[in-house]
Length: 283
Length: 344
Ligand SMILES: Cc1cc2nc3c(=O)[nH]c(=O)nc-3n(C[C@H](O)[C@H](O)[C@H](O)COP(=O)(O)O)c2cc1C
Ligand code: FES
Image 1: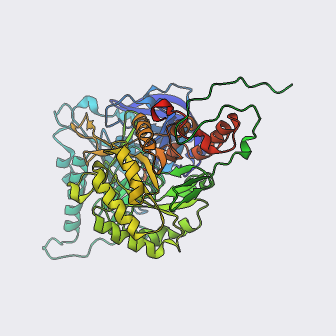
Image 2 (image 1 turned 180 degrees about the vertical axis):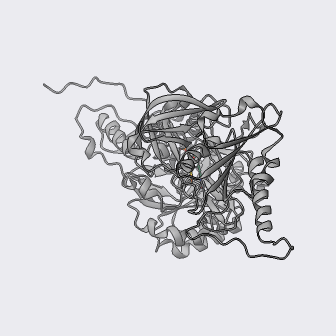
């Protein structure tokens, strides 16, 4: 709905993180307009001919193959996913792009990505694009255990991956929240994608950083760092995802209240200003 | 090739409201079929096509015209509006469930005045009739809301007002109006006192005493009963061991609600009163035909439009063909054709 649907032929089926399926579709006419942060709506007849539009984050774009890889989000009801039954060669309707690209400021040279199994698909394409643009990328990944992590081969070699697992089977034992203090001062910008816990941890870290930035060593208030010309994005963007909906900003199924106002994830999202310091995305 | 003779088919048993004639042998050009329907009699609403866009899925107005071809539609019902702004719940507000979806948008809207300011121009220029869906938690609030919208309704080209009986009622401790026929009738009575416009009352298949409501709502002042609303649903998120919707309870849409909706439409149609708009889970032209057969005079399309924006056009085509195949030229022939002897 909104954009004209495109027929996408399924080229490959993979796995991003355990249980999270990635589908690669040939869709040469669609990919030129896709940017990190965009999603597609996948449309396929389900039971009784009823068709739903499922939100699937764009996790990779391959200009040479003319293809786009999207990630299937698990259904909350744990239900059998008709889309998971697709076979290579099947053709379905793709609608998009849905949402706005993640904004990376001109002056950003160091980008911090904070993610978990749920959010990885939303930032994988950003890691690709940022490193191609010469930006240093560090990705903090959170998982319960080593087996839940995405394979490092899914990211460009130059991305620094820092891992925290709850059981300590690999990397830091604990959560990425405990690593943030070390990486936040380094980054020019950060993006968090994942569950409520890591979003909350990243938001608190961003708020602490703002306070530190505004206070000189002597404890006296200092001027906030001057934004470089052309900077529009806040320091921390949080990516929020939704499952289904109209995709045209009409139904209210994806609206979130932020400090800057109501944001429809399918139109103004999925990136929101996590600390609400700017009103750029208010509707 | 000589025209093939159509086999004589025994006509289905006719309902009281819509006798279905014997199949005729004349050839009717589907394009000559008249799809216009007049809903209600005291304050009639003429729809050029018996197709209604359900309140909510396509929003308040500005976005709808770009999403579907409103020329295939008879009535566009605006997403629910209230006197004061209403806020929706936290995310997730909408999830897929087996056979459909569940939402808890909670009639979120910025208030009637702002919606009229922002979307009024799209209603005026719409190629179909437009109805406002009114959300009120008390009788007094509804009276005030109608007074507010009536000030601008003519200027904005509003043909009808839909009273949302699937919205919560303060007097019923937050349960829906439709859970009490008495409260629903009281609300309708107030609405009738406040407007001369066509009044539609919207209920779901879960409405209590539907048959009584259907027949008594006419006396209370309703012109059209829309039996197309979402019943409640609940589903846990298995991975998080938490409700799948942040609000817990939500409203169901899609094929899973269709059989119950058809039963409710048949029930309401047998109450011999208001004209019926039927809906809930319609996803194909065949589903729409079933809904007419159950007793509806017009069909309501909702979430199926998201993935199938051409559905209204496809329904128009199949209605024309279905009427012509019976050797008739009026859509009325389809109404109630499946009700059978129970209602004779
Ligand atoms: C996101 C969403 C928002 C809705 N908002 C409203 C509303 O504001 N007022 C209303 O009466 N019904 C609302 N509904 C219910 C629909 O009008 C319709 O009754 C329901 O979706 C069942 O029909 P369907 O299965 O054809 O979609 C909404 C439904 C959805 C999915
Ligand atoms: S999905 Fe409908 S408003 Fe975003």
